Length: 212
Image (cartoon, rainbow, N blue to C red; front, top):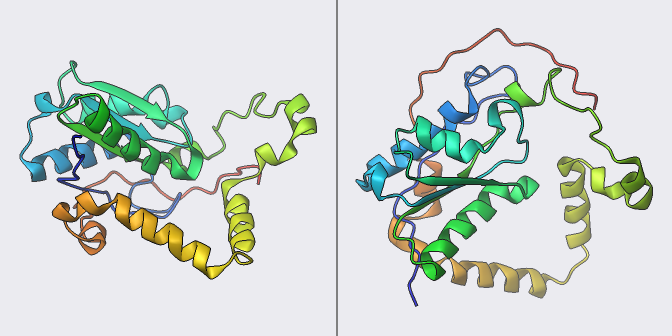
């Protein structure tokens, strides 16, 4: 069976929501910068890429309408490259990488790009579309469906506190085993050090009412 190996990584710096250096940077430009940098580091031409998969939890505005497709075009890849965007909330980027890996392993894809991105500043603000965001019938059936991801993380953290330590360590070992092929690309430390230099357009910090 074909193995999927990570050969290059790149990421943008993380800016403060509404106040940081990336608070006026469009989604396609931000993601496209990371895509082009990752390909450049791997010495891969854009035309060699068959698919780009991006995760995004807030797909509207600057990160709406298939941001993966717009980002790959912004990165200079040809129109023949496919792009798809998926939403698994806080695991969207990780799911995108997993899906890209599967396409290499099972579908014969030679080169795929996986990743994710969000723009809190340009999406979660007073322009955010909240029209009919809540289905009253679903709210009555399962109100937990509308819990914010930060609250969900707290619930999961509290729940796992009561689980046996041996169970947690088993999950960690299993995860490490699944990611063994990526060792050829370097350690997690090298990924954390892979932040790209950036020249951005910044606007004055704005306080938005998000309704939370």
